[in-house]
Amino acid sequence: MALILINAAFNLSFAIWIMQAFFSSVPREVDEAALMDGPGRIQTLFKNSLPLVWPGIVTAVVFVFINTWNEYAAAFVLVQKAELQSLTVAMPQFLGLYVREWQFMFTTSVIAIVPVIIMFALIEKCLIGGLTAGSIK
Image (cartoon, rainbow, N blue to C red):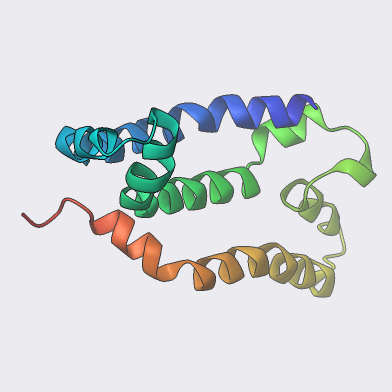
């Protein structure tokens, strides 16, 4: 539970900073025009604002996921039980003083990399749009 709270605290400020930039890029007139059509503020948020900032949401999710997935320091300090350790913390256990278990190290590395590659492949277009938003006027 402590690791979840630490990761949430570290990544929340970064995600808010990214999302604030994307929400401030949406013109206020879009929200005002939507409010004049009759829906409330929550409906305007979900039907008008969120589709416009979707690349920003995807960008924030990707950065937070990768940062959390690769986090080492807090997981090393907070998680002491071997069965609860993350892959990044458990990997150095295959490096002994005299023996290197390279086959296990390689297998663990591949298992650690595959979710990030799958996630990037699924949301590549939205991520590229989010990273390049605002670069051209």
